[in-house]
Length: 128
Length: 128
Image 1 (cartoon, rainbow over the protein chains, first blue to last red):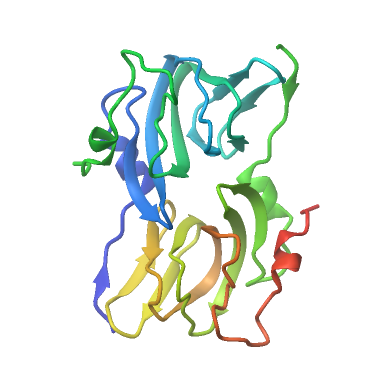
Image 2: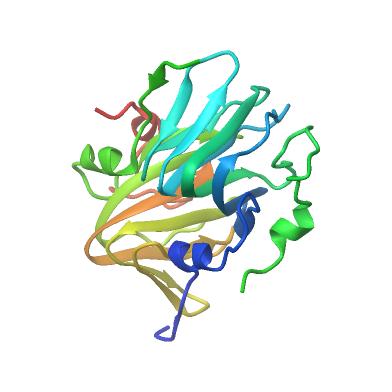
């Protein structure tokens, strides 16, 4: 068929984010959510007991701090998987744009509940 | 800890691909593979009975042809999910670099076996 439907775009999705540390779901596939998040400053120490978390930096620089292994610094285009059960804390000195892939049930602050915790309903609300 | 470990990078991964339509696994999380592929020309009509397939165009332009719905054109930063069970055929007039997320067991040509089919062992072999 020749009709063409415009598809979502990463830069456009990031452009609709106004709050730091407030991930938004932009796609769902196989029980996983693809999310975009703008981050700046320090998040909270947390772990996801049963879920790995894939990080891809779209713009800026992200440090993932670990308790038990070397920190990870991600620059544009760098990616990294935080393994399930491993305590970590994402931090960014300056504004950073991050793409995440994680199971739909993943709580972004893991079992840590803080002022920064966003319910999944808020994350899954349509952008724009 | 202060030691820093360099992480994999999308551009670097694409730079190591020399063959079109030969996806390579660059990360694994929650039973999903993140893959990179350089594509050019037309692939093959196929479907994945039980698996959605997430496409993100990193460079260039990709058309995903459908039998039963409008074609999808993805430009840099555009993303799209091909739903499970839906026949599709990715095509690119010029060289295009694509990021894929799909279950580890997904066959990239679905149930269609062709000269273009790459075994998962080949896809999962370390790059570089």
